[in-house]
Length: 117
Length: 110
Image (cartoon, rainbow over all chains, first blue to last red; front, side, top):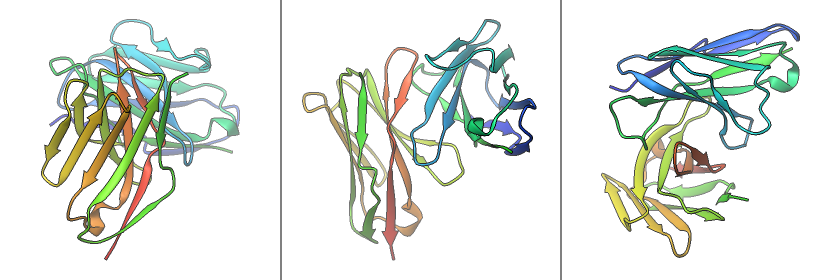
């Protein structure tokens, strides 16, 4: 149980285009989902926390107009990187907290590798 | 500011031995501490959670200790196997948020 999927697993796009990444909880309902970014040889950095039906809370230094997050249902959150640039190339990972589970447990997706040319 | 330190250099260990990884933190009073395994190009996989009022937790070949006075956690893998080779992340948890360390890469040599 407690499986989180991400789609796509990798994406290559041209500079200036927008890319949407989906995060789904497959066998549980997630009121809270988290989006992280990980650069090579660095730790996971929390970008934003999204709660179903409300606006996401962004971490300091993360541009909310560039990284659009939508959490429209209890099983789906999306991250859209708008007007992507090469410096946005990174590994994006989502995680989800089970609505009925302990608040200190989150389940991670497999990640999405974004490469912006 | 909060800081989590893990030995970012790789740890090489002979198969069958016990691997010990260290996580130190400063300017933080976490409610709990977690250890994750991350393989290249993959998301983290949860291994163990230990709370601030617990000293030690075990799960199969894994053991975690948590010393809130020293602000340190030790993660042990006994009878290590080549399949244990991965990067291990320490994460500190508080209200709503979890903060990750950079991880330690473990290589178990056959």
